[in-house]
Image (tube, rainbow, N blue to C red):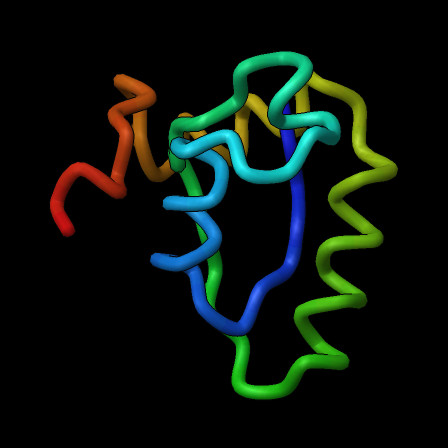
Length: 78
């Protein structure tokens, strides 16, 4: 499970799907967008990212399933 911040979600998802960066998402083949949030200010987004990264996996799964029960790749709509 990957948590990150970007100013261009469509570009970032394509980078993950095209396996551009050889980091975590490359190593673990993470390429589906199952949840995202929009924030008006980058500082708010960074704070939220840091908080979620500290959560245990169960809490993250619950957050996703509240909004996307089937874990559908939301980027397929683009």
